Length: 227
Image (tube, one colour):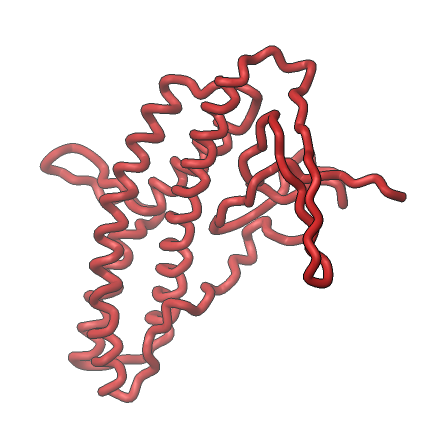
């Protein structure tokens, strides 16, 4: 009656969709991705009830089956935490972009207002990306979009957390590159958002609904994010 099963993961990152692995057991498998796994060490458990706070020590012991230096697990946790933050950041931008795009599609604008909306949608689509990649014919390269980088971070986060192991050199270098790419895309995203008040002013003048970035995007029925 007094047995507790502690979730030893940190807070799960924000994602555009959550789901279960193919090996999931009904009512016994959490949705993924989960947060980074805590490493062995000393922790404090805190319970606050009726204004009173109780604390006690909790010692998390290493899995005896895992033969790995504590420093390696700390490195894994450090990288997983960084990737979780990047995943949350990219997901937040993508979810907001999806919401704005759907709101803009629903507008029946005409004339000059329609042209302003179309230019904003074009910038939004170029940033987020689509199923069809636009090839840069001059440089012979494909321009990374926010969706591309988000997918890279999501895959890298999954790989880093797949097993108890120190990050590889490739994982470390790839995470640095993904962070740099995301940083550049977020600057473009922030510029786009800075222009949203002007767009909303134009919509307000034309008696159209304004774009509200805080609204959640429509749910993707094809996403495996059901309970």
